[in-house]
Length: 301
Image (cartoon, rainbow, N blue to C red; front, side, top):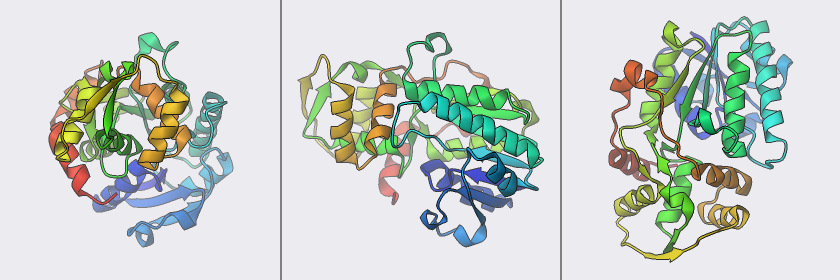
């Protein structure tokens, strides 16, 4: 198949492209700045400069493609107006994909509790709205929703490592939130499988690994795999998200606005509530958390 990938300079996109190439697909990458695409597989793909929010650019880049992976988000830089920007980008992308003759869009969003949409973070709500926009568009879309993806280079995983290597542990409210991480390789396998599966058209698939635990316990798993000793817990009944994000971003080397969005999302339970993806692809979602963490820590980011 001829495939268009957006977000190829990001964590998931950079890992997905070589997997698609290994499966025999031809890949085009729509990127804002081609100079940023320095992956070892760059010479094996067609690189097209443009933005996902530019309908004409999507049309040009996707002309002749069978399907597209929508893996971009606008969290970096600023959160104000995030939902509106994300909706507009999704609508423009869907229109461009239709003009290019594409037959499928596969989108990676975030795990969200549909019954608590009024209370979720701006980050998760924006991701949810992108999926709504794409699935309502003219090209059949598949929405995969995942929580923390465990892999080298993931901003979420970098923040976990930063927390695990801190000299003390904050006993904050978000530590009690439930998470269901997924190994990067498992996620890539489901992304690829959903592309070929006619059952996934118009569906939402909630993706998670076999382990469900609290965020605090997740940090402890990372700390243990790093060989670090337990640290003193400092009670923090309330921490301003902005201050926490700035400190975490500095320690992890992650964009502060992206960090703020991720930390706000951690306050919600990000777990699988719908078993459809497990029914269809459970055989691909089997990597234990510790094995995923160990692999991520041993891989170059």
